[in-house]
Image (cartoon, rainbow, N blue to C red):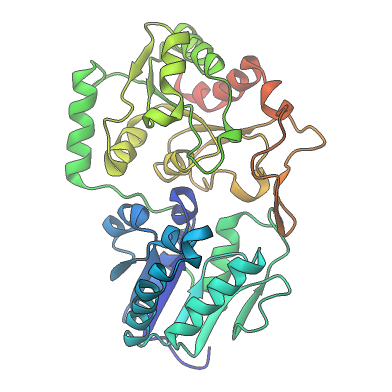
Length: 363
């Protein structure tokens, strides 16, 4: 850097787990440039992840979904988009840091348009051969060549920013903690150890999900072998009902009863988290819950839980065709293949063996 940045815009228009994964980099920027204005451009539904952490001066909500697919081609979307871009220009950022891979031609065009609209003289991002227009680049060697958090920390380091704390930031307030305590009291777990199971994977790719009956069996075994009742979390679209129908008395349904902060507080208190590759899994990593992450078609080398200060296990079969989504520089098979042998053949015993390792110090 030739000068200290005074007005920084960080861009991450993605989902929950991806936003959590940039928080160590935001902390590095905040720590190194405490006098700078640091704003973050996010999808509206992810602002609750960053706002309570104090890592950003302002969250700017940008409704990315309105400018995707056929919606982007509609003249009705052009006026609001132009107003958004003009508003960014008026903020007079001198530095923009882009927390995205330059993966698809359309995505690259949109990112370049958005960043150019800010008028910032310093632009920082990954370069996979398509980022020559950035003023400060970090080599992108492909998905999984580094964990995603490591890529984003490298972008902050490109600006000279660092921090000794590289953990994911946890969006947690006293009110969230009190609400979680009350929920636990309501189900008789205020003073008892428990596990949290999340059978979903978000709406972006349901191919990441393990079978619901297997989750139910894991819950039964955790109860019988470790005296751990299991709390189910997630939304109505996360397959919770299927787990309940296949399960037993050791399952407690809290799905749909928490916001993100309250869920974070529950995860902070649990003795074990078990779930697929999802935003909730990354939230468990931020909460430093002992966790087991189940991976199938997606790239574990890129999105394994970032847990530098807490125990975690990745469970996967390692079949030759896995991962098939997000490999090298391509999205590839985002929804996996119809057979999904990488998850269909993953047994309960393999997941339980992974659960045992973080639980053993507690038994």
